[in-house]
Image 1 (tube, rainbow, N blue to C red):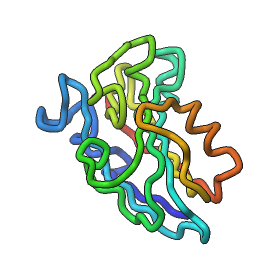
Image 2 (cartoon, rainbow, N blue to C red):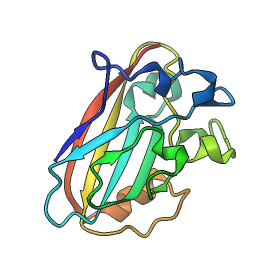
Image 3 (cartoon, rainbow, N blue to C red):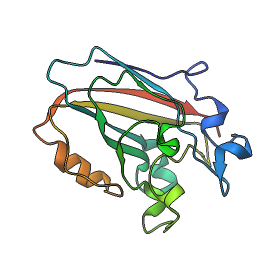
Image 4 (cartoon, one colour):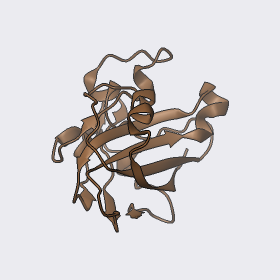
Length: 169
């Protein structure tokens, strides 16, 4: 399986992070998700899932920062379109991100669930995108947590691929 995300020298375009235009933000938080191309999915793939995690956030927050989780992306999907997280252009269920955790405590559905873009406070950060090909539809509803996704995927992962996407401070 192969995953491709458009970048500029390995960096996400500004519209997907802290330097986005106001139209791509919600109350100061970037919310426009980037497009993801998926190819060469294994036979038997029924759905895809993804997670976007900032492991470089550990020195700042004390834990890896969850920027996006999504599941039950339909089999045969070859493109998760630009801004799919908040436009609803692709059927999927989306989980809570770290803004809805105890540190921030956001209850705003636009920023607590689905994609929230990179806003590295201390240095350029690498954001690890992992896409999973699964042999089933997961029993998850919008607002699940990353741990729920991980447990639901156990025994159902046919393939997974990760890539690092950078964002500038």
